[in-house]
Amino acid sequence: MLRQACADAVAWPQDLKVAVNVSPIQFHNPDLGLLVASILTQTGLAANRLELEITESVLLKRSETNIRILHELHDAGVAIALDDFGTGFSSLSYLRLFPFDKIKIDRSFVSEMSGMDVSAAIVCAVANLGRSLAIVTTAEGVETAEQLELLRAAGCTQAQGYLFGRPRPISELNFSKQFESAPAKDDKRLTARDVMLVRTSFSLVVPIQDKIATLFYDRLFAKAPQVRRLFPDDLAVQKRKLLALLATCVGKLHDLSALTPSIRDLGARHAAYGAKPEHYSIVAEALIWSLAQGLGTAFTLEDRAAWSKVYALLAAAMQSGASGLGETPDRDQSHPCRINREQRS
Ligand code: HEM
Image (cartoon, rainbow, N blue to C red; front, top):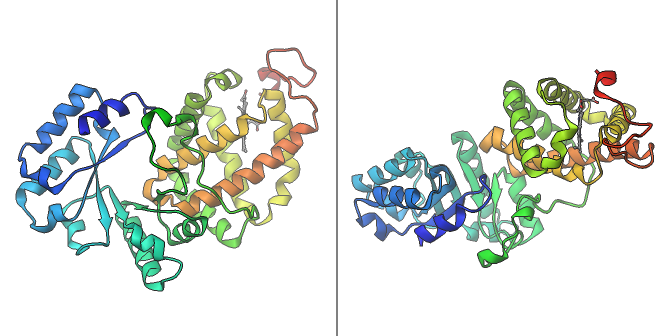
C-alpha cells in the first residue's frame, strides 16, 4: 500500500504530501526504515512528501527498536504524525520520546466540542501544546462549520473531515481546487480579534519577510505562469513594495477606511499593469499559502481566516478602484491606461 501511495503521489503537484497509516505490527520488522527508504527510491517520491501516521501503541512499550526506526525515518526526511491523540493513554511523555511533526486530535473530541466543555478544553490544550512545541495540530473528523470555527478559536493549525471533502478515488481528485480556503464565516467585517491575530502574525513575518515574499511570488508564478510577464524580471523592488504596503495596511487595520483612497489608486494602477479580476483569487491563495509555509505551526486556522478577511477587503477596494478605469486593459495592447515600466519607476 505504501508503494502504491508513493507511486500515486509522485505525479501530484510537488507541494502536496501523502499521508499513510503505519500499523504497530509493521514495527516488528527491524528493517522498516530501510524498506520505506527503498520504496521512496523506487517510486521517486521525495522523502519530505511522505508523512507516516502512527498511533501511540507504537511507543507504548518504549521499545528502543521502535524509537530507532522512527528516528531513521525522520532523519531521512519523512514526517511522523501521532494519530488519534487523546484516545489511548495520551501520555505527554510520548512527546518527549520522539519529536513528532504533527499531532492529530481524535475525531471524538471534535464531535463533542460544541456540547462538552471538557472536550473543547482538551482540544485547546493540545493546540496550545502544539504551538509551544512547534508541532502542527490537525483536528480530525470536522463535519460542520461550527466545529471549524471552534477549532480556529482553539488555535488548531489544520483540519480534515467531510466539511472539506469525502474519501474518493484518485481519478476524481481535482488538484486545481485543492487549496481553496476552508469555508469561512459569512461575516466579512473585521473584529478586534481579527486585527489582533493579523498584527501578531505579521510581527512574525517581519524578520523573515524576504523569505515570505519569495515564497509568495514562487507560488503565484507556479499557479499562474501567465502573470509572470506582467512583473519586472527582477522582483527585489517589487517584494519590498508589497511588504511595505502590507505593513501599512496592518498598521491601519483598525481604520482601513483611512487607506481606501490610496488602495483604490493601487487598484487602478493594477488594472493598468494588466491585473484581471480573476487574478485576485490566485494572489489570495499564494498569500495565505506563503504565510502558512513561512510561519509553520505559528499560523493557525484562525490566523488564516483573519488574513483571508483582510485580503478580501483589500482586493475589493482595489477592484473598485480598478473598475473606475472601465475595461481592464491588456498590457500587450495599446491602451490609454497603459503605463510603461520606465514611467512608473
Ligand atoms: C490585494 C492584492 C494586491 C496587493 C496588496 C498588491 C500590491 C502591490 C504593490 C504594493 C505593488 C507595487 C507597485 C505599486 O504600488 O503600484 C504591486 C505591483 C504589481 N502587482 Fe500587485 N497587488 C495585489 C494584487 C495583484 C494582482 C491580483 C495582480 C495580478 C497579477 C498583481 C500584479 C502586480 C503587477 C503586475 C505589479 C507591477 C509590477 C511592475 O512594477 O511592473 N497584483 N502590487
